[in-house]
Length: 246
Length: 308
Image 1 (cartoon, rainbow over the protein chains, first blue to last red):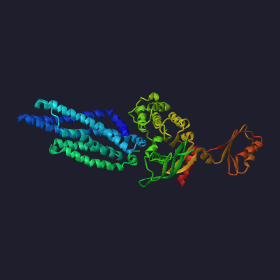
Image 2: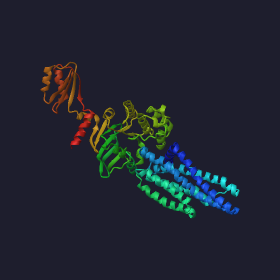
Image 3: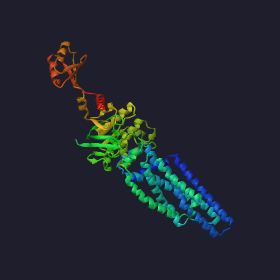
Image 4: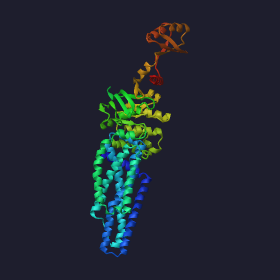
């Protein structure tokens, strides 16, 4: 595990040296704006209907629960696509990965290190931005209308803070695996964007309004854990070397 | 001296293409082993097998008695691959420190300083590698390869693309490695001059097959076509030369001032020539067998292989 962290630290550092990373962090903040706007509209409608304070509180709670379920994963997927480019795509293109493979590090350590390099900073940034978005929603909308702070319920909060990072790590591991063995490592990176667009569309079309995100994430975990463990046997240095240019 | 690297009957097939066919050789402790061959001959594939990056289809490859595929084996090996594998955005120090951490080098700070001094980059250690020249990069790659004090260095064309002064510097580091630090070096190259200067044993690979293998001096002597250079204090007179040529299986190849190049068949011996000349009052300064140059050796073998 320690050696995997050495790889993860270096790759993450490399990503933070790039301006692109900060540009994407800005985009994460911008992506929170539609949530803020949507929440504002919902609350304005309710105020027009002159609903009771309890109903306002319940509506706020419900909206914030939805944010806690979806926003962390949405943001994680987008920022992970940036970190993944530094961890594996660039390493393969510049053939620094070949040198790494020739060290005493095991393939599992390298795979784990590369996955951590993407997932750890990705999830941390996404969670921080999500928490800031929840704080902003409270300060701008909840407190002026309801009169006090509202925290999402325990289940969405735990899902957002614990389950989402696990799901994100598993998705990252799967994408990293594909990036390691595919000739064009950019292709698997589109999986992040695909999941991101999927969640985004589901939210803005309100298609996902009735979805039980907690259950969906658990199902995803139940699928991804055995798949990742199964794929482990197909990862060989030869596959990685032969899929690299040169 | 024990075998440090041993390859036995290595074959490597990629798809339908046979990249290596029955490749076998040994590298002994303290050798600077030159692995020669044209582009696409199989040099890099052999190196990748040695480093456990590719698996041989058949045959056995071991380093210090351990199978090359074992992660443990690579603790004893330092390497510079065809692509230097350095991180452009990191400083020279950071690049070496990264590998020191991977190799769990104790007292890594001192070790990093030492290897950077060895390749004369300690004053540029803080600079970003992206601005380094090719020669500096190769020196840094050598420093990185040595940071865990390995017994063996595997170098894939370490001077390729470097200017002559850079090549001299890299060569000097390699020689220091073997003479002062008792490292065994496996060096792949198509720079014949370089191999001539630093390697004591060689193997020549062409189209995946070893065509020539052994002590470099001995191979050059064997391929030297039995020519002998005789240097005298005074030019040899014509009558003696005529008499010399009448000896069985001796013919004069070239004559210039005080130097005589003789071609000798299997039935003639150098001491006989020396006796013959001294008996006739010729004072000999030096007698030496003319070795084939590595270039002659290389082109002859490759030409023969082409005609097969």
